[in-house]
Image 1 (cartoon, one colour):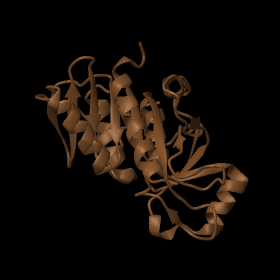
Image 2 (image 1 turned 180 degrees about the vertical axis):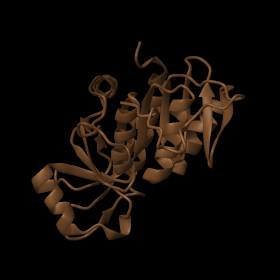
Image 3 (image 1 turned 90 degrees about the horizontal axis):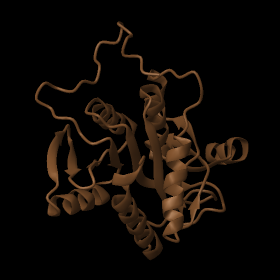
Image 4 (image 1 turned 45 degrees about the vertical axis):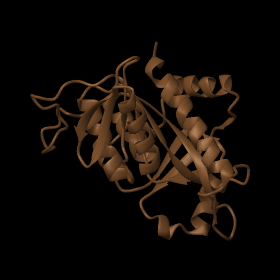
Amino acid sequence: MCRDEDTNILIHPRRGKKERKIPQNGLLLVNPSEASLCHRRLKQSEGEARFLFNSELTLAGDPRFFVAGPAIGAPMAVMCMEKLIALGAKRIILFGWCGAIGEDLKIGDIVLPTKARSGEGTSQYYPLACPPAPDIKLREHIANIYGDHGVNVHPGCVWSTDAVYREDRRLLQALNLEDQVVAVDMEFSALCTVACFRNIEFAATLVISDELGGNTWRPGFSKERFLEQKEQALIILLENIGTLGE
């Protein structure tokens, strides 16, 4: 559903004359800690570093794929995604953290979102004919990979916000009860929207880093289960992303 033909839009994402194309498959990292790990791992295996705004982009040689990030927040994540698509990306997986709203999700659980709900300000500029959602086949492929490694994953709708310090318990409870939202992050809904708009495959792996379902906030960023689960989930993606779509 790409709308590049809209002549009223002033700036379109483009591949520069001296910019080379990138592989079709790639991983977009939200947080600096995971992004640094991935870039370092690829560079140690003779990966190729490329320029990407205020972020980083590294290409793996065999199998061919890329990692990009960090990209925190919807505007930055969308800027990165738009450029990656312009450079040739056709299949992007987001890896990040999220806060649990549903009572069934606990610190360290892995969420593969099935729906998106926007509370951020970027999605509205990408008009769609239907609500944004991740690519079904790509999500199922990722779920199968995790299943083969004995990693349990959870489905559900994710709500994205720009304002982590203005998350109102009444709003979160309503989102959970009325719209079956199970978790909240900052990037997923915007990236879902752009992926649908640009007609590429997109899915996400989000690790529960904190719990927001009750009357108090319960952070788990330093808990052993969170740290172990996110590392395992990330390494599994890195080892399999090059073969997605085959």
